[in-house]
Amino acid sequence: MDAMEIQNKDLVYDDNIKTVLLYPPSDQLLPPVIRLNSTDKLRLSFDDMSPESYQFKYTFVHCTENWETSDLDQMDYLNGFFEDDITQYEFSLNAIPPYIHYSLIFPNRNMQIKLSGNYILKVYIDTPEDGNVIFTRRFFVVEQLVKVEASIPYYPKNLEFVRKKQQLDIKLFTPDLFSAEPMQRINVSIQQNGRWDNLKSGLKPTGIMMNQLNFDYRNGIVFEGGNQFRNFDMKSYYYQSMYIKEIINDPNGYIVILHTDQNRSTKPYSVIEDIQGDKLIKARKGQDTRIEGEYAEVEFWLRQPRIKDAKVYILGALNDWQLDQEGLMRWDSRYNMYRGTLFIKQGYYDYLYAVVPNGETRGSVSFIEGDHWETNNQYTVYVYYRTRVPEYDRLVGYSTFNSLDVSTY
Image 1 (cartoon, helix red, strand yellow):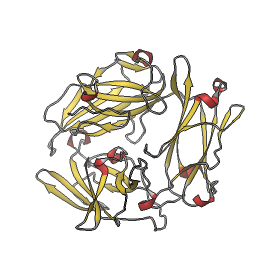
Image 2 (cartoon, one colour; image 1 turned 180 degrees about the horizontal axis):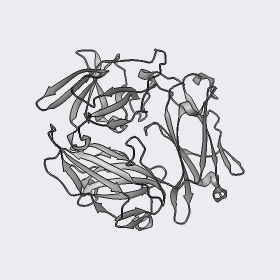
Image 3 (cartoon, one colour; image 1 turned 90 degrees about the vertical axis):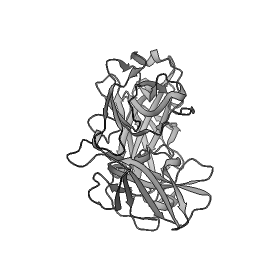
Image 4 (cartoon, one colour; image 1 turned 90 degrees about the horizontal axis):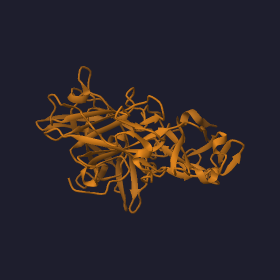
């Protein structure tokens, strides 16, 4: 594995590592959040396509509100050991290609977390130097001291956005603890679905009323409305579910070809049930998904005229919400369409297509998917409070909600 700079993001640095999941043990679709000083746990699992097992290790890294490594020493935020081994693993059964499934539950008796905030789980071999890290994952430790109130008005401040964009109006209700320097110490981030490329971060309150902080920006806090996610179901390779055109049982593994997608930007909005871009790793009934779930090369086809000076990406939890080479759609001149492939495990998947202009890092889904105020997006509000001694960003508020639940006409 070549050494590369490790970033505090949800990234995999070893091509053999697949299907990294981090979630509360009760529900795979819940976000990786635990409450400080509670009995909350998170489950980590991943597959290694290597032919032999390894002694993987892990550690936690405390981060600032904008995901830079904080100045804290590990002894400031960890009790017990500063690193530990991942000892639970199983070999796959009858899967082509074969793999080894690893799992971990934390916090545990070997490592406990003392402070709230943003955290990176770092998994590596031998020592945590950059060249040994195989993947990193974000998670959150919250001390819920702030109440978040949110609404999405039908008429935004900028009337050009009516029926298209979603403007978030938020208020924070804070205890007396935060009456000192709220303008300097409070920072808010807002995330749409699981995306990080269009994160609104570093938001400061614009007004203070008693124990209430208002965020009343002139043009509002605005996101693309976008559209309901596309999806496909490949929990079983024995039948072709809706949106799957063909399943090929190749000696080297399965190939799943999806029906060709179309541009939806000029089509009227229609309600489609989705899971807000998430993925559910699950094999057919009677299979143990962890070690019997099989992988497939999934082909995506998009009928869309070639877009000049921009790239098109598959976007969703199926590729960890990354706008990178793995999810890049490439122009196929033979068919005059975009084509992309992902190597993923049996399950149910949501996705959209995002367009990224050359030189930019933020994707736009409205160009291909459309832009609708009615879209049921999931939003997460993170409230950070910067303490002075020791100096770090506490996560004092965490709230997640669906836009349909807070929309107001």
